[in-house]
Amino acid sequence: MNIATPLERAWQFRELIRAVVRRELAVRFSGTIFGWAWAIFGPLVMLSAYTVIFTSVVGAPNSAKGGPGAYTVSIFAGLIIFNLFSELAYRSPGLLHEHAEVIKRSIFPSETLAWTATIRACVYAGISFGVLLIFEIVLTHGIPLTSLLLPAVLVPLFLFLLGMSWFLMALGCFTRDIAYLMVSIVPVLMFVTPIFYSIQDLPPNLQIVVRVNLIADYVELIRNLLLQGTLPNPILYFGTVGASLLIFFGSYRFFMRYKAVLVDVI
Image (cartoon, rainbow, N blue to C red; front, side, top):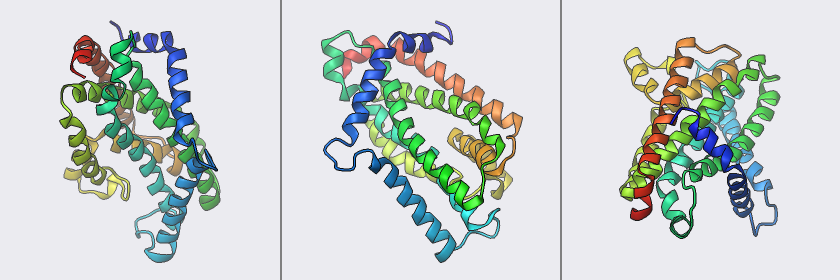
């Protein structure tokens, strides 16, 4: 097994992945009158609420660069990344149980479930990102050219989330406690993720603790490129990408190693 094996397997089952993702996206808003408009309305309402709160009620912190508008967009950018992570953290432990009937009754490539769940979550995050870009243009009057480098951050983020899904899928098969553990841990992780603050605002000893959280690093990288118009620290970038690739490949190997056993325990 080499590092390209997960990608080769995904390409092999690309039609299955596409079909499952299309079905899940279609089911999400089935039975509603406005359909996919709700996917836009949700983040639009959230961002509007933050704008009102931080411009009229609370006010942006004195350390916020660019004023309340920029601070609001910064918060929303952090929330998009964290919500993407939390959705997968909550769902992944139960994915195999959710599809147990199909897995047991057919030769189903169960590793593709992580792909479909991650792509599905990224589609909704992408819609929120579109709303964010519109608000950034309105509130800050432009988007930095460094935003063109976003794919260099989003691709390893996707691989990290995919690896996390494989790992939690496998653990969640052996014990349902993992799902409850995620419910307990994820809200705590929100406080060690720089959503309402910047890592630079923390004391040096706490910065080290926060940087262990890869989601915090991705929030900072995306803010640098998309909001601040600055290139990220090379050490931070390559360290984050390297850790993400290790999690991606290591989790895939872990899942595939116990794949045959997982069918018997779900």
